[in-house]
Length: 461
Image 1 (cartoon, rainbow, N blue to C red):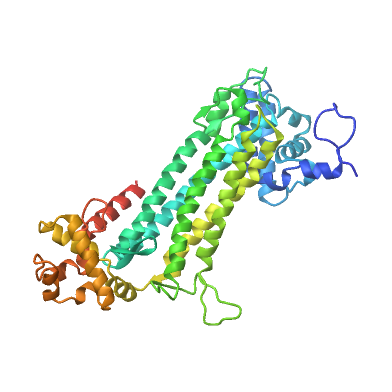
Image 2: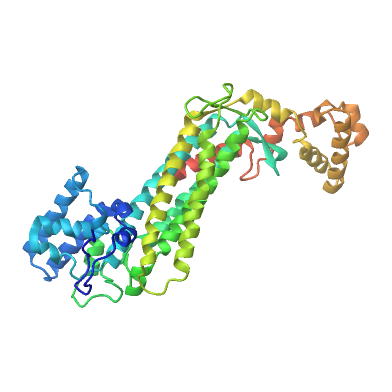
């Protein structure tokens, strides 16, 4: 059966059922219902305050809208595709509740500025929630860092052993990354928290509305100064998706490291039963499903960013139906980021256990201290490039003899260069190698403790 249209009597026929379903957004934009109700309450109060409707009508509208909110929360208001979208669903139910006065709610408002308002109200809440999750994630990393200042871990460049690090220093890198994420979201919030309500369909309205009043009621910091821009701007959504993509980049990098660390080849961490799964055929296995899923879901958020950029790039001013496609991308990106932050927080808090003995063994079994030999000679007046070349030959010789630098006798050292003395062994000890890197931002133990204090103070501000 053809469905009745939700627009004016300009149309004589009814919409084809398949097109009605294709056109409808109620299947996903019901996510905005609480925000639609909140925005509509503010609009009704403004209409009454400016005399566009009577105070009694304003009160009746607000009461009806709050009744719908209660019905929705109780599970008694679940509109179907015949409602087309959440905005019409609310208006239709409101009219059922309060009669013809419900038809006055849409005075001086278009669905174009209405949906823009709802989306901004939704996103600013989600931004704050994600920021809170980032803080929780950082707290877990900081706890691990405090416990592992003195734990050593091999550091890598090109995925080749490079120099040993304090494990805390490694973890703090992710604290700094996510701090940038937290700050970026704060910037996005500023450009999200601008009210388009009152921009109308595209040109404003002939009614003497008070846009500043509705903005104040809804907690917006500013209002759009151009009605065309107000109804068609989705920069804030693209900015959010960009920030969300960077959050996922950082989570995915840590996820990849956990996957590598948990492998039999590395054995730097053990997976606990809380966050690992087994194989359907190989009973001995523990699989790092959590970090693998995070790594996989990263591409999903990237895809939403790309989709939004492509969606917007060719749209003429002002509103176009294409903009209906912004919501599923935005909603799914929000849900994905939040789920991944929660999962990685649990993983780092109770899903892995570092293996200090294995880490110490790994740090002691390579040539990651070679740079310190060159630094040792440079400190004794040997030009660094000369020292660098000499140490390269030493490493080559050790490899041919299946030795490490620590295995060379003092005589062998002094044959290589007379500047070597007995203190060379202390200089190349892994703990000293780490401790010596005491420049600001380095992995030296004292610097790492300072960094933990700085990070703790910052996230507790």
